[in-house]
Amino acid sequence: MDSISRVALLALTPVILWVVAGCDPSKPAVSVPVPVRVSAARDAATAKGQRGAAYLATIKGRNQLTLSFRVPGIVDRIGPGSGSGDWQEGTVVGRGQLLAQLKQADFLAASNSAAAQATLDLTQFDRTQRLFKEGAASQQEKERAVAAKDASEAVLELRRQDILDSRILAPLAGTILKREVSAGETIGAGRPVLTLADLSEVEVEVGVPDRLVGLVRVGSTVHLTVSMLENRDFVGEVKEVGVAAHEGSRLFRVVVRVGNSEGRLRPGMTASVDLEDMVGHGVGAMVQLSALVARSEKQLAVFVVTNGVARERAVGTSDILESSIVVTNGLQPGEWVVVAGASELHDGAAVEATVVEPKLAH
Image 1 (tube, rainbow, N blue to C red):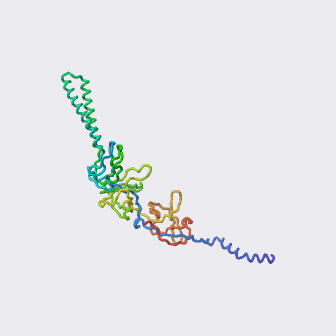
Image 2: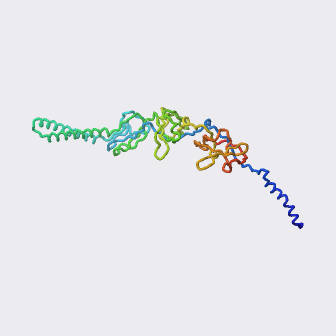
Image 3: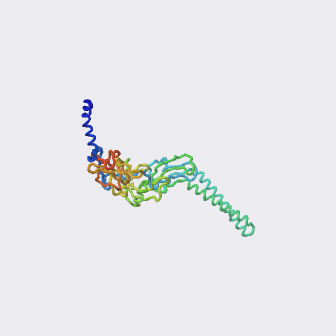
């Protein structure tokens, strides 16, 4: 071996020794810990300030009705009368109060004409009856007189009903929510004229998913928050629970009624209906959504860290609460869960964990 080769061999000797030592099966391979962030799983049953079963809904008046005339005509009155003008939104009216009326001249004329014809046909009927008994009138004449009398009486009844249908009386004590027409307008039958509602109580209707609707009971107390009223809380009562889901969805209709003696709740306001007291979160833990990894197409998992080692754990999940999720099985409150870096891990991976505060919904 020449001097140059000897020098090269001496230079490579440390590298060769290092490689041989690294390949020694009797020595364990060195695993570089993966840096991750972990957070302790919270107890879902005791987590504060959660709105896990809160649903947005629009407030509407109880017995909210759209009123209209059943006959066409010209609006003669749509207000309290006595020259006080048309109804204004927010006006309170009593049951049976006259709210609107069409011009009566044509209806009265038609009714008077029908009454006159009915009187004439009745007189003719009585005369034909006497003549028939005396043998001076035929059976056909008698039948024609009966038909004429019956027809004129029916027409008179219709004309009298037209008079009633040309007026709108308040079917309940309530508040005028909307006025659709003004005095002097010509309108058709069935056109909306006024919207009236009883605002002493209001209702909200929410869609509840099938997995929760079985826990909602008629008569249960629920809480509502109205953002337009500085997030003030109100208490309501469940009055109806749907037995069939809305077509095209898995949501069931739940109606909640709320007392409104102060009149602060108004139709159209948005309320957040909290059903948490009834449905709760169930028994389980709460972790950040970022902790979840897909174990398979239908199975989720988290990585739980113990003594610097991450173990993959299959879990079942329930409600999503903003940036967190309820884990119903596979995880206990207090266990350390990887919330950042989970996608880089495998079962049994060594980790270097940094603790972070849980980012739960508030």
